[in-house]
Amino acid sequence: MPVTAGQEYPGVSIEQGIAWVEECLRECLGYAAQYRVWLAYENHYKDYFWERPDFSMKHEVYLEILSRLRDTSLKVNFDCANPIMSGEDPVALLSQVADRVVHVHATDRATPFEYTHAAVGEGSWITPRFSGYSKAPVMMVGFPSSTTDLRASKA
Image (tube, rainbow, N blue to C red; front, side, top):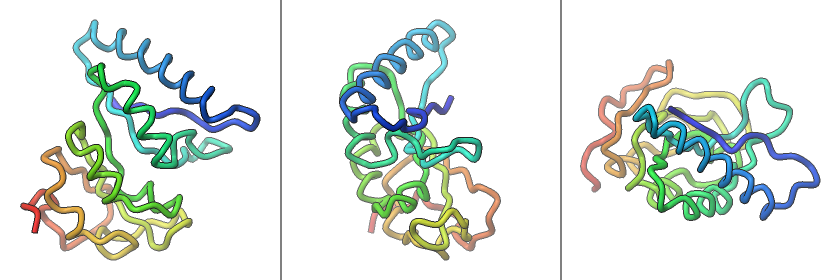
């Protein structure tokens, strides 16, 4: 089941926010374990209904939260397009979390910092750079693409 850190809020320091997210995810993980459900933490940008971006949109915050939860069963729900929204490299992030990925949203953005989607491989991230980092199921999110297997061996 995908989970996020939730919206960032003005006045909440990075350290305080990380502590809150860690505490909440630990509690959620304990509850999910009772039902044998995996939680997969998404590198999220922003929900359509949110006023502000996800608290852990930036790689360093997302990775710190994952690091603090290394001793848990928390997995990763990786979205290829979300890092593009903050001007970060999706492959750089994926290479650091690949061992925990259980699901991939193979999506793309037309241009960095804009919410417009593009067909996978026709936008801002380079599909071949992604290939081979994850053996997780790849979910194509409603956008046509000539890419048929993003899980090919690394070149």
